[in-house]
Length: 428
Image (cartoon, rainbow, N blue to C red; front, top):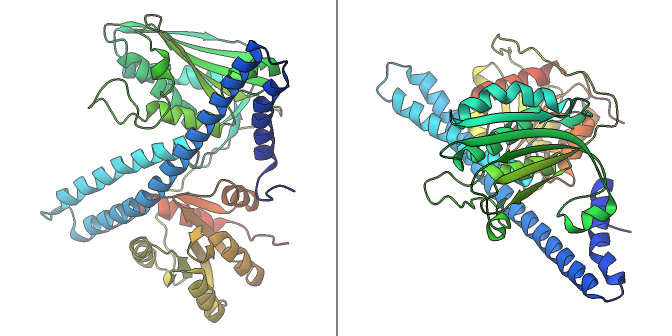
């Protein structure tokens, strides 16, 4: 038996990778077989390298998200406390702006490492492209001519629209930067069927029906040495001071999180084309859910909340915000302390907000345990990083409300408000 923590999809993908690697060994030993073995070996090595970089990036982003959450929450609290007329107000405002800029950097790292929480719906990719054309024209500059070649009968795909828009922006801005004197940027969509034999020479590819989204430019192009590293975080061929080198890494992560992949074709003097492959949505396109945000501020009168957070600065910041909204807050820095507080106050606790990753357990295990005793509890889970193999699928399965770190005061209060409106969970 294999690792029971792995999902069926992960096992299938691993078996497919092994199949690609082993298949050439069955050949007759010809030079062609030797070349295929070398190619598959290089593909497997590249896949392992990118996964290792992703784990590192996610870990760094997780630690920084805790720090940035503390900075952001306390900056907002201080500004609210002193008022706009205080001499230090503008200084705190600059601190808040810097923390938001840094949080965008960590968000990009999470997108690359596939740890960013996305919201998928069935959609028409052509509509996404069409809605972005005006914005892309502004971002790429006057000397860039944008053309489209969109398949009129494009099949539906399941996407997180915001991240696909981000991928389009990153690819288009990148293309604009390599066409300083002007040029042509072409965005294409098409239905493609990938056959098994085509996957042998294509990194990350697999058989099936996909929608292909490509962005090409008429710039100087790249050699094979550059394209081999083009998706690695902080790699850039444009020299120092030209950005952090995360734009294409983010595109790579977005493609992977959509259960697809991204390819690049380029040569010196022949321009560059990036192509995202996204699996076709087999079921009928679902209606997009639009939730209107309530404008009124959250206010409760004496509800008791159990706050479970092992990072002391984050815990203190969140506790202060909840108390100002009328909550009575019990604080715990571990699963053990949370259980003790819950046992003594379970009749009074109405709301539980917990970090997913705790030093002696998980927030997910805790809330399920608490719900077994008090089914009416309202739950909000939070994290800056989750184990893809276990936590995220379970949170989605149980439909727990979740908020990604770092978050602002407004985002936290919105999440709390939505959690309080959730119906009671059915615990089997």
